[in-house]
Amino acid sequence: MITNLGTVDRAFRLVLGIVLLALPFMSGLALFESVAATIVSVIAGLIMIGTSAMKFCPLYRIFGIRTCKV
Image 1 (tube, rainbow, N blue to C red):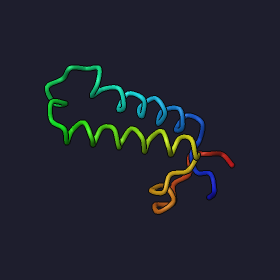
Image 2 (spheres, rainbow, N blue to C red):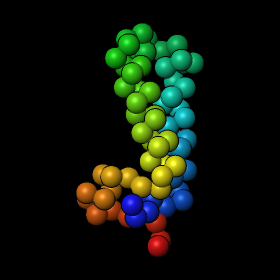
Image 3 (spheres, rainbow, N blue to C red):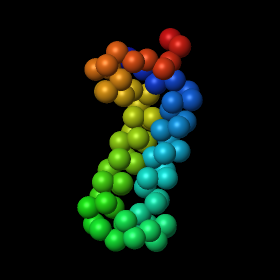
Image 4 (cartoon, rainbow, N blue to C red):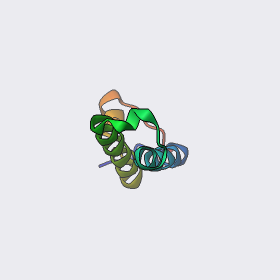
C-alpha cells in the first residue's frame, strides 16, 4: 500500500474516529437509542481510526486523491 494520507488528514480522521466511537455511549442523544445508529457510528469510527493508523484510504486510491506530500 502506498501512503495517500497527509498529517492533517490523519489527525482529523483520528479525532473524528474517537468522537464517533465515544458518542453513542457518552452523549445520551435520542438518536443513539437505536441499535442500528450505534452500530453505524462504531463501525465508522473504527474505519476512521484504521485508515488513520495505516496512512492509507482505499477510497482516495480509487479516486486518485493524495493528501500527503510524498
